[in-house]
Length: 282
Figure (cartoon, rainbow, N blue to C red):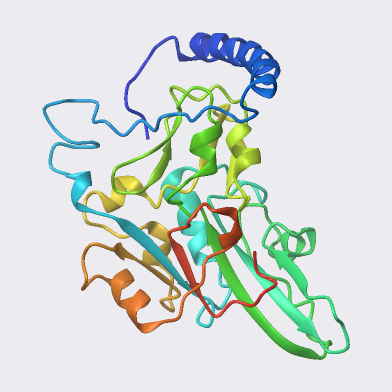
C-alpha cells in the first residue's frame, strides 16, 4: 500500500540502503554498550491527507479492528485461495513466493514424526506440471495414514508486530484498524522484516526489490469486500470480519469456537485465529 509517489524512488532506496547499513553498524556498537536493545520504530498510522482518513476519505480506520479465522477441519487443500491471492495481488507467478499458502500435515502409522509439505514442495510442483498452477500430489495413496489435515497460513497482522519494530525506515507500519502494511516507496530491501517474522509470512519480491506479504487485501476490505482468498474458498475454511462488529463473521467464529493462535509465546499477539490444528502446527 503506497502513501505517496516519488519518481526517484530507486535512487532514494539505494541511498537509504547505504544509510541503513551504516546506521546498523553504528547502532550495533552503541546499542550493545548501552541498552542492548533495538530502538522502537514508530508505526506510521497517520493519514497522508488531513482532509480524509487513509486510504480513502470514505473509510474511517478508527472504527474497525479486522480479524481472520481459519477452520482447519474444513480445508480440503484445493489451493484456490493461493491462486486467487496471486491473481488479485500481482504476486510473482512462481511456486516459491506467496502471500498465503497451505501446509499439509500427515500422520503415518508407525511414524513418530509428522510429515509436512506445502504447494512449494518439489513433488507437488511436479504433480501440477507448472509453477503457475498448484496442487498436492497424491503421495500417500499407498501409506497407512492415521490422520491428515490442511492448514492455510498467511500474515497474522499481530497486535505487536516484530516486523514493524525492526524496519529501519518505517516502511512496514501498522494501521489504526490493526492491519500491517508495507510502503514500497519507503522499503529499502534490507529484509530485516523477513527475518524478524516468526511465521515466515514475508518474502522478498525480486521484481520490485521490496518486501511483500499478505495485506488481507486491504484495497478490498476498506471498500466493504472480502479478501480474495476468503471469497475463493469453496468450503468456508477462511473467515474474515470486523472484531468491533459483534455480528460479523469473525466475531461469531470467535464466540462459537475454542480458537488458538500460532506461536503465542512470541508475544506478537496474532489476529489470525485457528480451529482444528495440532501441536505440530507453528
